[in-house]
Image (tube, rainbow, N blue to C red):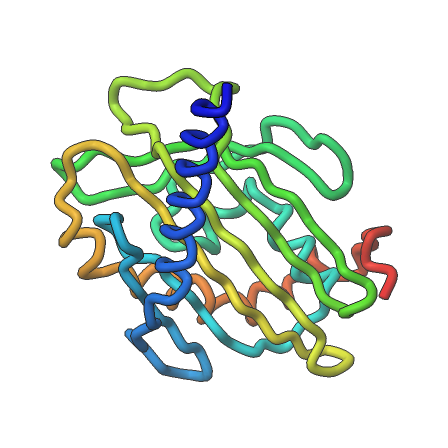
Length: 217
């Protein structure tokens, strides 16, 4: 039993060490344009870059939550999104949705099911939006590759009555046989394109006058 405990602790400490090394890897500025900064870093043991976006945009927390919740319109607002649809709304703060991303032929499109959670922090007057891939719900299809790993985190703070500061960090393993350099070479394009259009989309009528009970700060 003591040996089992020791082995378990060693594994835990090794994983903790990998996480610390990943966090200590310096970020490299990939793009800085129109008030949007895109950074990347290559975590130890990973073939694919982790990306970070920092920007400020005009808008409110409720507009942003309405925008992020509106998955059916993702093909209009998210870079290379082919289709997205709601699978299940668990509650006001949580939902599951399907997402398909287009890749150039002959590479197969990537798809996954995403579990999204809004995490408000009234004390900090801050909103986190956490997304990660979820297993099941939608059958794997032969003409697409199911993404084995996805994680993205938004940190959103109020900079004024109608001004938001956003930090967005994401990491993905697209799966399949696609070379890592192909993904890494253009990794900054997608997030920059999506965020550069976001401010305009928040002004659309469908994102106005929405109420979210968890935004009580």
